Amino acid sequence: MDAIDVALVQIDDKSLSLVEYEQFPIDDDIRKAVRQLSITSNIEEISRLDNILGHLFADSVLKILKKANLKSQDITAIGSHGQTILHLPYAEPPRTLQIGDANIIAFKTGITTVADFRRMDIAAGGRGAPLAPAFHVDQFSSDTKHRVILNLGGMANITVLPKNNRDKIIGFDTGPGNALLDDWAQQHLGQPFDKNGLWAESGRVNEALLIACLNDPYFDTPPPKSTGRDYFNTAWLNNILSGQQASISPVDTQATLLKLTVTTISRAIKKHADKTNELLVCGGGIHNPLLIKSLQNELTGIEINSTNKYGLNADCIEAVAFAWLAKCRMDGTAASFPSVTGATSPQILGAIYCPSK
Image 1: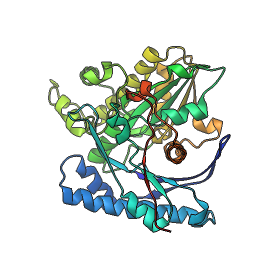
Image 2: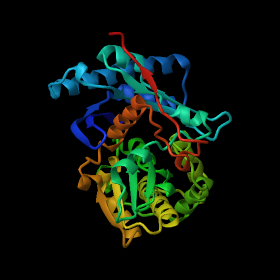
Image 3: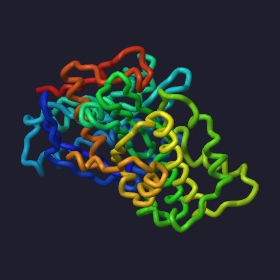
């Protein structure tokens, strides 16, 4: 919800290269309306935003094509993850929902569009997330290093890549990444996020609050597992804050939330990837120097780098991943790991929307 990430990617059987990448801003009113959907919604509002986002996604594609001096006919397919407004893989029945009408994208751009990547995995008994690990395996596996890929988005998720062993790939959401930090900054600073972590750095970690947060059973649940804003949100935080014996200042709460993100990530790596040599970080959280420094303090002996080191902009990994997943769908190739999502078998992900020629 920070922006629309658009990556123009050239892929063949042996290589992948980023041609263009751009972030297109989303109007504040639309962003607020989408955020509100996770709190209270109705079918009319969902369908309205589904249409609006479809047009915004299509317009963003057309803009980047113009920038690259390319035409729609030059593009094989669009991979559109959509905007997640519901992700409840543990509910009965399990379900997930992304909006941004792919029909509009395909019609307006004239390009075959692949969307709805998560629900086939859920139909097969999986969590529908995370989906990037298959891409991480393809791009970042090493014969010499045990690697972990850390995506610091709204949620934080890791992919464990043992050297020379694709049979033991695991990946899961460790818990909140930037989501609680951003929501708290918006509520108390009136800013979309805590720039460079400066506000959190000026506060002090409240140990009682941190312990109360860490007591949530999600953190000790073994993978495969997945979560989202439906679970880790301000209502979750306020419920924990209400149980504290003394009031905690907003700035100390922010410092504690950053510590929560760092602690849950580092504990997950130590428990499930204790041989890690290198941690590759991507996602918006890479721009929070306090967060990265705190991770390094917790993960001594592990080399921490941005994915930029290996030729892929840390901001665009998710967008590139869904271009790659779209190619898998067009090729009819399964792109999920049961060891990651918990599905009964590897699945071909995504629905194809073809415009009339």
